[in-house]
Every structure is written in C-alpha cells, then in structure tokens.
Image (cartoon, rainbow, N blue to C red):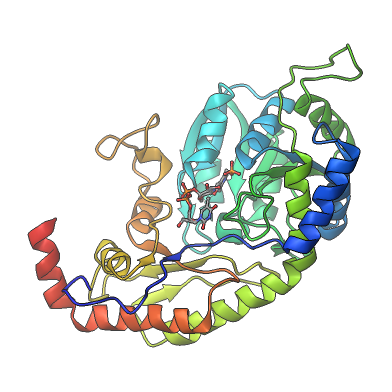
Length: 387
Ligand code: T4K
C-alpha cells in the first residue's frame, strides 16, 4: 500500500485492544451498584476486587487506585521521599512524571541489554548522598534483576519500588510480581493485560504502608472528620471495580490466548533473522509483542513502522525516544548519553498483540513484513521522497 494499491487489512489492527468484559456479568454487577446506590468511596466491589487480587498475587495488601500514575505518586508520597530517585529512561513517560509531580528529581539510568530493564551496575554508579530511592520498571513484564537491586537498596538503606504497570501475572523465581521491594504498582488501564478501564493498584507486604495508602487515597480521612496525612482523591469507582471483577474471571483464559498468539508470532517471525522477538520466561502474561530490528534488516525500524501503518497495522515505537530526551527532562538534541537506551529506542517496536488478535491477522502482519523486506529498495526510495 505504501507503494500504491489496496491494503489486505480492512480493520485497523491496534497494539493491545482491551479485553472485553462479558456484558451479562457486568450488567449483574451494575444492578448491585444501582441497588445499593454505593458508587464509590471504598465500596464493596472495590474491596472484593482487592481481596481477589491479593489472593491471585499471593501478596498481603492491594490498594486499588484511580490509575497507575497516581499509584506511583501515592507510593512516593507515603514513603516520604525527598531528593533524587534512580529510574530507567527506557520507560513510559508516566514513570518519570510521577517523580516530578512529587517534587523528586528523576536520575536516569541506562538499561541492561539482557532484560531491557534498569542496569544494576549503572544504578550503583548513580547512587549518592541525595539518592532517596530506586524505582525499577518491569518493562513489558520482564522482571528487573530484583535480587541485585534489593541487596543494593538494603546496603544504602533506601526504599526500592517497582513500576509493574505491564507486569500483572508475571513472575520472578516462583513468585508473582507485586511481592517485591517496599511496594509495587500496577496499571489497570484499558490497554493492559488485565484492566478496569482506567485503574491501578499498589501492592505491598508492609501493613503500615498499606494502611497509610488507604487513608491517603481518601483525602487522608481516618474517620468522618479527622485526617492523618496529606491525602488526595485516588479512589477507584465501583463501576471500574466491576469491570475488573468480570475481567479477572476471564483473565487466565485471556493469557492462554495471548500466549498462543505470541508463539505463532515466534514461529512466523523466525523466518526473519533480522527481527528479534523478545523472550518471556513463564509465568508471563504474553501481552506485548515487542521486536528489535537488527542493523542487518533490509528496512530500519522507522521505515518498517511506516509501511505497517500504511497497511492499517498500527505498530508503535514504544518507548522512543526515551524519557531523558523528552520534556521536561531533555530534548531530542539535548540529553544525557545513555548508550543502551539510545540503541534500543531506535530499534524496538511493538506489534499488535494480546488475546483479541486472530490467527489470520498475525499471518497477514507477517506477510506484510515479508513483502516490505522484499521490496525494501523501492520502499526506501519512496520514503526518501516524502521524509
Ligand atoms: N508505568 C508504565 C511503565 C506505563 O507503561 C504506564 C502506562 C504507566 C506507568 C502509567 O499507568 P496509567 O496511569 O496509564 O494507568 C498508553 C496507555 O495510556 C498507558 O496506560 C500505557 N502505560 C502506555 C504504554 O500506553 P498511549 O498514549 O500510547 O495510548 P493510546 O491511547 O495511544 O493507546 C494505545 C493503543 O491502544 C492504540 O493503538 C489504541 C488502543 N486502545 C487504546 C485505548 C485507550 C484501544 O483499543 N482502546 C482504548 O480504550 O498510552
């Protein structure tokens, strides 16, 4: 299509279409909401979902929050951090922004090429007397080097927090994420493997922290009149919790479908030695189809994304260009050097994935990649006339 003609893909294929909650079950929950007239403020469905998530993850406490960004901010606030926080630049901008909104300074760390996550070696180099905490991100559900980071955090007596926004149902050494560091946060945004439409959670095994977070999410109230802390409104509504309860019933089935789709991609992309599909260790949610293009590929990442978009395959360049090159931290021309981050940010892309994708759609996507590589010279010439 980029060279003319018609695309074979009529329905646009998005990265991570949301899981559809079953309507009948959702309406039953809505009936109970209308019947009780409790719409929000720590209602029964929020409490039920919190209990089911604690059981699912095997963690002691789950505090549901309006979204993942606020979950991060609340955690940073509850830990009363001041100064610098070491965080990878290769993440969604929301991770860094949560720090900035809390008056903290993000100090961008490079990534380890074996995990694409925070490099423990570089992290250690960045620690100084102003370091208030380490914030690791389990990008695409691949786990950070939790053991090394835990030892380091203990050694310097600083909190360790994990942004597990992508990582619901992913595990590390026989335990599901949500159990590590001082606290972990999840995003339950519509695009995540498990979602509540908008939403998030903080999980922790620290009961005092969990109690503080519960008060904090409701303006700091401990009873009708008195507050214990600087609070905010970060409550999840009953309607969002209802979506979560229905989705949780179907979640394991959804993971199986995502895994099947991931494995089909693995088989078909195996035909292209220049495309590396990132590997997942089980347990994993298999939600993201992340590929890295080697420098031997006939088209580079940006060229291939352009071709895919012209064919209605809405691939995304997550997480280009890296937070260190984005406002308010830097710009495309004014940034700190982070060699691994800069390398990956120009070579990685996310293809449509998740449980909604059909086998024929995956086959079509791989056929388009095949054609794009075959006609790479014409495509490159064409793109050079429009870029
Ligand atoms: N930490 C990390 C590591 C994160 O990745 C995120 C969020 C956070 C923290 C913060 O968590 P939240 O505060 O968001 O809970 C999306 C999501 O909005 C964001 O949640 C996510 N990470 C980020 C990676 O992706 P955009 O701006 O790229 O989303 P958008 O609207 O372009 O949607 C992506 C694709 O999904 C589109 O191709 C269309 C499809 N889509 C999207 C929505 C919203 C649907 O099919 N239906 C929908 O309802 O940020």
